[in-house]
Amino acid sequence: MSLVALTVEKYKCFERRQTLELRPITVLLGRNNSGKSALARLPLLLETGLRTDSEAPLERENLGIELAGDFTDLIFGQRPHGSVTFGLHFDAAEIEATVQNIDEYQIQVISEFRGSSRNGSDLHVTWNLDDPRRPTWSASGSGRDAIDVTFRGLLPWPLQNGNASKRRSLWTTIPNDYPLVRYVGPFREKPQRFYRLPSRAPAAVGVLGEDAPHILADDVSRGDGSLLAAVDDYLRRELPGWLLDVDRRNSLYSLVLASGADSTVRVNLADTGTGLAQVLPILVQRTMDELRPPSRPVLEIIEQPELHLHPAAHAALADLYIAGTAQNRCRFLIETHSETFVLRLRRRVAEGRISPDQIALYYVEHDGSSADIRRIDLDDLGNVQNWPAGIFSEDFEEARALVAAQSERA
Image (cartoon, rainbow, N blue to C red):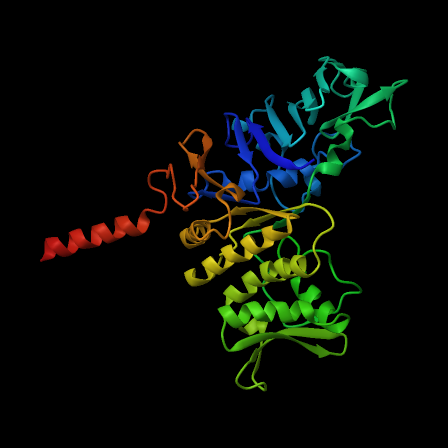
C-alpha cells in the first residue's frame, strides 16, 4: 500500500478537519506562523506512533526535533482535557485515531479508532472510559479483527488471555506500508573546518544536514568518488568556476572549494558563503538517491530548501526535486517561501516535463483563531485555477506603491 494523504483535526492551530494529499511533489505555501511547519513535520510525529512497541500513542521524545513540549501543545487551544485526531489514507486502506489527553495523570489514551479497507475489512474501537492507567477497549467490525484489543502506539493489537497477541492483523501491518521518513530542517549546520572520517557512511544527511560532509568523505576515501563527481556536475551549472573537493589530513579531512581555473586555489568551505553550505545537504541526498535508489518508499520533508540562496538558484532546486520523482521511490513534502521555486514547477508542467497530477500545491492560511489549508489547482499548461488573494503579490504591491510615490512627487 502507498500512503496518499494525511488528515488532522484539532491539531495545533488546525481546529477544523484538514486533509493533505501527498503527491510526488507536495508544496506548502503561506505566511510566517500560519501552520506550515506543523503540517510539514506531521509525518515525523505519526511515525513515532506507528513504529513502536510502546503503549503511549505517540513518543515525541524520539522525533529528533522540537515539535511540542507537552502533549497539550499538539492540541488545538492547548486544552488540558482535549483530544487530537490523526488519519492516514493509503491506496487500499484508511485508519483514523483520536488521542485523548488525561491531564491529571500526564498520559494519553486512544479514545476511538476506525479502520477500513477496500477488501471489506473494518474495525471500530472505543475506549471503555475506565482507569486510563489500565485502559480497556471495545471493538466491533468484520472478520477476526472484531475481538478484544490493546494498543501499541496508534494501532490496535489483538488480545489473547489479556496480553497482546503476536498474531498480526491488517492494521498492525500499517508500519510496513508507511514510508521511510527523512527530514531536513530549515537551518542546516554550519561547515566545520575539519571533520573526522566516520567508521561508516551515514544513510542520510540528517536533520541539520550534519552528515553530508561524512557521506562525501566516505565516498572519496572508500568509494569511487562518483557521488562527489555528481555533486560537482550540479555545481558546474550553478556555481561556474568552482568544484567541491575533499582534502585529507591523516584521519581528518576538510571540504574545500577548488578553483576550476587554478587548482592551487582551494578555499575551506567554512570560509565560503552561507548559501552553498545550506544547500549542500540537499544536493548530497538527492545525488545519493539518484546513484543508489532507495529500496523502500521514502517521504522526504524539506523546510525552506531555498534558504540563503540567490533567487536564480531556487528554480534549479525545483528541477532537482522533479528529477527525484522519476524513480517512483521518493516523494517530497516541501515548505517554501519561494515564488521562483513554484514558477519553475509551473513552467515544467507547461513544458510537459511533469504532469500536474504529480504536484499538489497548498496554501496555509491563518485567520487569527485557527488555520485552514487550501488546495491550489494546476491545469496541464501550468495555469493556476484558484490562486489565493495576496499570495506572492508583494512585488506587485511594492511596484504599484513606487509608481504612486513617483507620480505624486512629479
